[in-house]
Image (cartoon, rainbow, N blue to C red; front, side, top):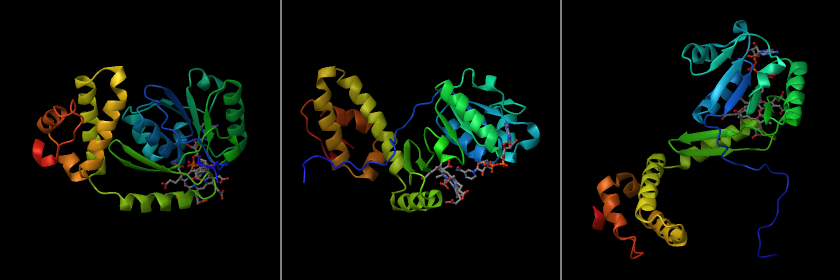
Length: 232
Ligand SMILES: C[C@@]1(CC(=O)O)c2cc3[nH]c(cc4nc(cc5[nH]c(cc(n2)[C@H]1CCC(=O)O)[C@@](C)(CC(=O)O)[C@@H]5CCC(=O)O)C(CC(=O)O)=C4CCC(=O)O)c(CCC(=O)O)c3CC(=O)O
Ligand SMILES: NC(=O)C1=CN([C@@H]2O[C@H](COP(=O)(O)OP(=O)(O)OC[C@H]3O[C@@H](n4cnc5c(N)ncnc54)[C@H](O)[C@@H]3O)[C@@H](O)[C@H]2O)C=CC1
């Protein structure tokens, strides 16, 4: 046995792709498209939906009328890809789907064709969301419904205040970078931040006020982590 991690091929590269302000083109306006739109909007993408009005489901029609997304009211045309950074295709026409996929590959645009795993640069997964926290479960194409069941099981084990605690830690980390901005202090900052996360409970992290954060940060220089009571 080697002391290094064993390689288990056959997985996906799971990343947190930053699509903020990027142009995501969703082709189709049915139930699957509606889900894709929610995921893209939750990541602050600029979304265009290409689908004839007659084929829109209620949710997609709602997002269009609320101007959460732009709408191109017709079937897909190659020019829809002109300034696309990502394409999500969810239509009930396999031949048109394959055409979309081939064009995306010519133009090197990352694409997901729902229903056709072989025509996907990436798969969607089942997602639990709580503020800044996202947990994605993938079964790598083996069992999408099971992915959803596993995701629910994981979510049940997480404390209710997890997202709020993470949000507060985010604020503290930002303040720490202001107090200790030097690039060469990275290792010290990271060690101290890790120690705070390990020694305080989630509830304490949630309850940490701006005041408490400022007090806590006065201990950074010494490298010590005071208790919650000491800074409250
Ligand atoms: C490869 C992948 C590509 C992609 O779509 O990105 C893909 C492909 C296919 N899905 C199919 C069917 C179903 N998909 C779902 C649901 C979800 N599918 C999702 C992802 C993925 N689906 C990717 C792999 C993810 C992974 O393996 O982990 C989820 C997780 C995320 C999302 O879509 O947002 C979302 C659950 C979200 C949630 O509830 O949290 C359900 C259940 C339901 O609708 O409730 C069913 C019916 C039951 C079943 O089959 O399990 C079929 C047709 C099979 C056929 O014709 O028989 C294909 C094509 C094929 O397999 O060939
Ligand atoms: N996660 C997954 O991979 C899953 C995939 N599917 C598959 O995804 C596809 C879409 O599913 P639903 O949303 O339920 O279908 P749907 O039938 O509700 O919607 C199809 C949509 O595509 C639009 N459309 C059809 N041809 C088009 C074209 N050439 N250009 C632009 N828009 C076009 C229609 O107007 C309609 O809005 C189906 O093939 C379905 O089998 C279904 C469930 C899960």
